[in-house]
Amino acid sequence: MAKSRRRAKAPARSGGTKTRRNGKARAVDYQALARFRYQLRVFLAFSATAAMRQGLTPQQHQALLAIKGFAGSELTSVGDLAQALLIRHHTAVELATRMKRLGLIKRSVDARDGRRVLLQLTARGERRLQALSAIHLEELSAIGPTLVGILRQFRSAQRQR
Image 1 (cartoon, rainbow, N blue to C red):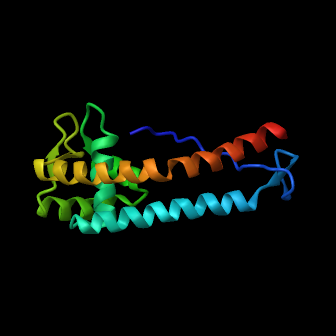
Image 2: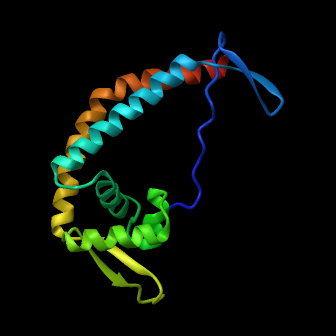
């Protein structure tokens, strides 16, 4: 799991309200921001419904994706899972315990550091994640042009400043 995350810059567009950042006045395109946030909420609602149809909570789906997606060639620790889901360590422990009971993941102790618990998807967890990922990729393909258009609007506004 990567420790640092890039923060997205606030978009600017002429014709909006001016804000200050680093001492420079910038315009804010509230309409584009509202459209972008709306599209994110629509996607998250879609994702939650898709997870529930697969018998998972949205957080369990996110955990499966984090365990598989952030691990690379290494196993994901409970601490990595907590960081990826922006939850506390003890919440990640409880989540992992529930997912283990459902047969979605396996837990093991790190051979190099006995304090770390490592997580790995089971075949059942892999199947659920594959099914959900296919559905999500279809949805992203459908809403992608809208999101790209909004992001282009932000980028164009930044160039104009």
